[in-house]
Length: 129
Image (cartoon, rainbow, N blue to C red):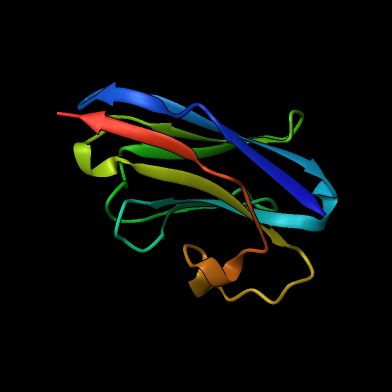
């Protein structure tokens, strides 16, 4: 099993920045990809950023490209989401997710729920205008 704990959420003004962290514990060797998702009230959960562990490749939703950056600290088993130039529409609960190495994975699922086996509890981000 893998446990994921997000932190770093809070309130920020539009145009500001925030960094989210996701601490990974448990069977960390069993996963080979992670992503950040978000869900606003009344909306479906959407993927915003993906990172693979093998080559470190990343992939972003169009809505955050150029503003958000996903990264990983291997030594600390932590994945980050640096959010810059935030907008009110970025307000949501942000979740990190991890995928098992042994699970079938279609690259089209990089920002899809189907690509992940473990989920954190989420951290709230509120952007005021």
